[in-house]
Image 1 (cartoon, rainbow, N blue to C red):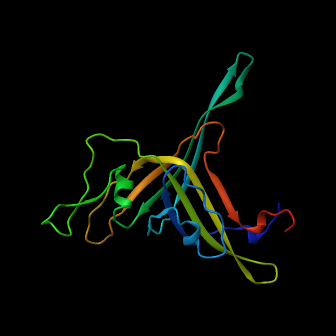
Image 2 (image 1 turned 180 degrees about the vertical axis):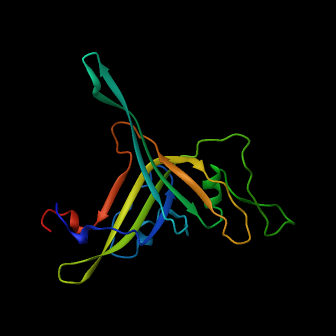
Image 3 (image 1 turned 90 degrees about the horizontal axis):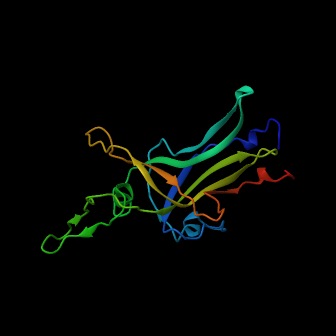
Length: 204
């Protein structure tokens, strides 16, 4: 609803990031914990306090004319939709995701408790689905508070950039990536927002 309404201000207080195989169904809002809704997805665990940076960039090509010094029309030539974040946990899910595919394997005996991850000689496409969830609390007109939950699903995409890994004594090492959405074709959405938030209702 238009106008000043502090109940519509959102702060991503806490959130989670998930990955899954392409084609995994988007989670539906259940009545229990979020982990139950995301049961078919892999939780990426702790991320840095910077949270997630959401980026949408559209590229426009101007059409000029002899009769005007200003463009008379614009054509959309590209759309880039991406999420940037840094993972804090190093494990069999996060390291291959950061590196671009592959898997962690246990070394053969007698090297008990030793695991290996090989970085490929050349990069391969590691296409996945990515899910984001964050929660906030809004203040209602009667002074009570209500929980609101936002989910953002990229059904098909891949890591398109990775940050340097810094190994230092006074800071935790992080796995920072940029994950970009890819088209599924046939006019299907590039990504989807799901909101458990009645502020979108026209009757509120």
